[in-house]
Amino acid sequence: MKQAWKTLKRLHSDEKGAEGLEKLLIIAAIVLPLLGLLIVFRQAIGNWASSMWNQISSDAGQSVPGSGGVDVPSP
Image (cartoon, rainbow, N blue to C red):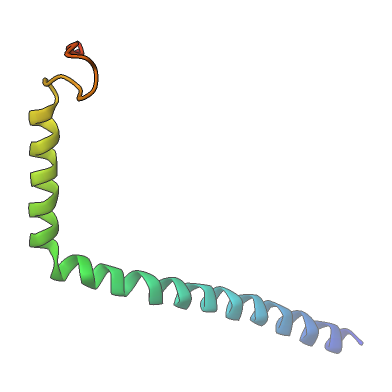
């Protein structure tokens, strides 16, 4: 009886390990292609982020459209 119990315990722990491995493989299947895209398009993404940052920083001191000409105070 003890031998059967030990065998069942071992099989149960193996299932947990297999489940963890399956989760890891699913996460890797999602993350690795995204990482590849980031590496391939890193220059374009950097240029886009830089242009957005420049646009936001240049618009920071201007009045808000539709505010009736009231300037928004800058911090």
